[in-house]
Image (cartoon, rainbow, N blue to C red; front, side, top):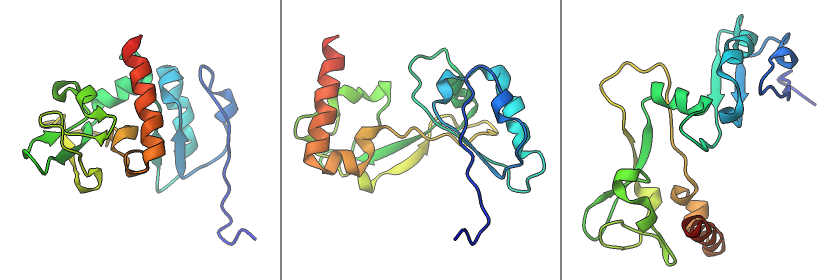
Length: 169
């Protein structure tokens, strides 16, 4: 029995918003956003027109820097998960300036400076795009920082194998 009288509507729109027209919603979740055309987003957002909540969630993998999700990321505060190394006190993030491939080691998620295993549950979110009044709260959620992937050894090995494949191509 649905006591809240809530409904979930699943549909798709990558280059045409027509399938999304009609329902009135409080929450709009757009997954694989990197593949959508930016021009159709305002049309899709009209489902929130009469909502008092108007919550939007955009997610996906920015396969390049020339896509819709990256345009949204540039407008955001660009929150990155930072983990302090217990050995050398270096703050580690999965950002290019921190050499993230050094963090992906066979033994586990490691400090890019000294190689000590990191406890990703002891990190904090850091704003990497400060000084602006952002209208988007953006979080970079990469698998290596998620405890499920870096604390469950079999999952970590799967992630490590994938990283090795990427490095060899």
